[in-house]
Amino acid sequence: MSAAARDPRPLTGEPLALDLLNTRWNEEGAGRDLFDRPDGLAVWLAANGLDAAHPASPEALSHLRRAREALAVAVATSPEEGAPLVDAVLAHGRVRLRLTARGPAEEPEFADPAWGPAWLAARNYLDLLAKAPDRIRVCAHDSCVLRFFDTSRNGTRRWCSMAACGNRAKASRHYARSKDA
Image (cartoon, rainbow, N blue to C red; front, side):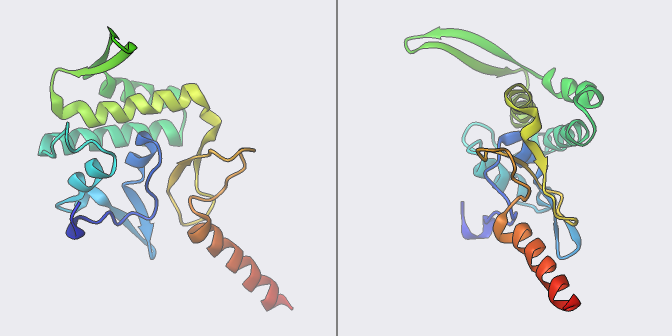
């Protein structure tokens, strides 16, 4: 990734489905969308190791936006409400089970390769639901819309980032206490 294609998002490295949702974030009170940048799709694909197998294209961008909306509904409301939208994305691919020299393997297949990244994100959401649906969280900061998968031992993570949102909340509480004193 070149310096010009730096990922501007405040939170990266989440599971694929949540990383797709995190292509929208708030910055200084304004909404941002990585996919509004000319290089945004290429940045996202590279950040998730998908750029080699899935080239950036207008079709792939359109499919990812559709998957992002489907996942946003499913995560914000309930899997039941989001199911038809997520299923519509999943209808564009399938898993082919194979026996390889290393043992059983799953291989995604797509009739149209442009659906690959969107399908993989929707499939990842199903994996997260199967693993620990209660660990899919939204940051507790009032102005943050970022999602994360809580991997803390006791499952009590509240902030997308302790350095950013967690620190702002602590500073705000400290200011309120010192103002009252």
